[in-house]
Length: 301
Image (cartoon, rainbow, N blue to C red; front, side):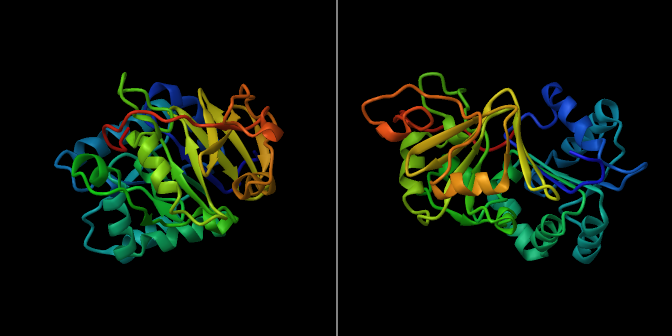
């Protein structure tokens, strides 16, 4: 991807870990000298340790990436100032916390409009990771409420940044999480039964876009090319049938739109073995996700 191009980067997890330093440096290489770089703390803005999290993130980007950042605080009394800051920023980053809290704040503060505008105008680098990545589709998971409070699984209205690209998706980070051991913690800790129930509520022309941990989907907003980066895969899942796309794969947005619509086949897709419940015509590319046991934590890095 050429320098100065607009980029939307969606990270599944590990956004401030050593595994993602190389990617952050690649993204920073697109920026001008002394760029305006903003950390949007909203997803964890309700946490009592938010200042410590922001300070840690600033230090990570300074030491590991060479990027000097400022924090757009969740409690800023001047939302107009925050929107102006984000509109002018060369680089915007948002990461762990609660997707539902972030969505509520961003809708109220009209920050979502600015993020949508950045994608639509192909302006600068926008990095949405972990919980923030949950918010970018047209539908979003209230992961805290489902797991921690026992609320019935439902979709929330997302920011729909991907809608500006013609992608009608619900983005799920932490897609391959395995922390549960004997319990199914995939799909941002939802597990298979809950995801299977939720995806039947999605419109037929939409799909789930899953991003594994320590993995990213990089979308060049000027060339309309998308690349999978990291140690895992990106998965397009539709009605329980999944297309995994391996790291290093580059595809056009048209190809990605076809996958979401259920008519495409990804170049370099990871082949899956044919099973009794896998449609014969797509056996080399498509695989059906099998049921697991149940969920665990929340959508935070």
